[in-house]
Length: 249
Image (cartoon, rainbow, N blue to C red; front, top):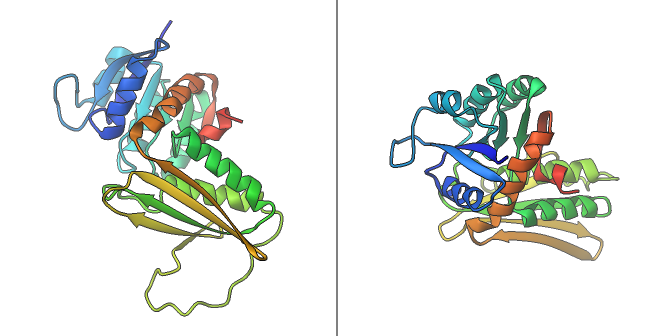
């Protein structure tokens, strides 16, 4: 029997990619599409859609401003949730974790398989090269910064370090923010620029050497395999699970 999926944020760029790849995969049936503005094939009332269709999975692809409430609406109905939105607050994540105790919520900062491998390799490198910085580059319409991928990468680096990063002296900042934000003791720099999609470099420094790990999503089709994988694997989960790496390694 096909996995029944409702997509919220269906009219957005990621929503269109999700619709395309899920419809092309016989494992899934897209039974509802929800967006901010009513249009052919798109409805605006998520609650009505969930109550009518009773899907197996809600695929949440909006923004951090609305994703938390959408996820809670689904979890309250026993519907499993895949959350592709970033920018959720710690309080919202706590609520989602509590609500998913009898269901499942799968938070996926990045659906690109290559990006997950990049984060995994960064964790391996951090065990040997604890000094690291992250540069994440996205299109101009991405409003949250740093990206969820960068924040997750920083967390993985910190968890993987077997020794402390070098302590730097107090910087002389000629402009506020020049050294980026510090996430999990890793400096993170965000770029927002037309012509880009989703890119990240992780730089590791050691004595006489520099290691660079970089991933580039050049087209949103790079997210398709991860979307399908997440919508399948969330049925086997319980509670709140973070990161596509949890079902890849």
